[in-house]
Length: 275
Image (cartoon, rainbow, N blue to C red):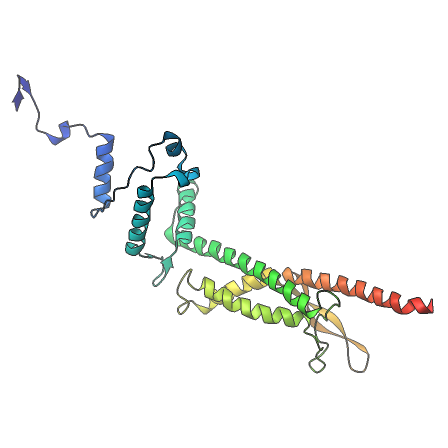
């Protein structure tokens, strides 16, 4: 091919591809089906354009309208991403956690990125977040229940019934705990049931494991030899569980301190006339 005495090559490789051409070709390669949407200019004011996030009240109304319509279109056409296991889905939160962990693994020369490990780690992170939420709800509801049972702190409550026959008139601390623990366990399983698989196909050992994690957060117990007073008034020993940690332990300590102060006040009030 000649042009004004020059020879031009028809070889496609002879044309230099610009950076924008490479980006366009990459988009068409990875996304064969493309839909475009045009938006009005957010503003003609340079100061607004330099800081759009803080000047949203000054944006072009047509731009805002276009963004709203585009958002609706994306939500209508978007579908939940399929999870690693059959029947599971990935939420936006899970996808962001997976992306972060995968990027960290790629940048770590000692790590080997693996989708299954990333998925399991993501599920574990989300479970811990839900357990944190459940623990905060436990604290809030226990405070309200104790306040209701003690008359807003006027009298302490029993830790537990001495035996199965003589149930105190007011609920004990363990009664409040057991009732709330059951409700929160059901709520926990409902929330985490869709992280890895659906709630219908979630394996029992997975459910059991996450409940154990929650229980260790709320109450930790040790098996010890404990003293108890029988109906004949004598003290005997037997194996039993003693709470030594978790959120429940703090409520037990507070109730015992409250009981100590309450008994001291009663003693002073009754002994004052005698003194």
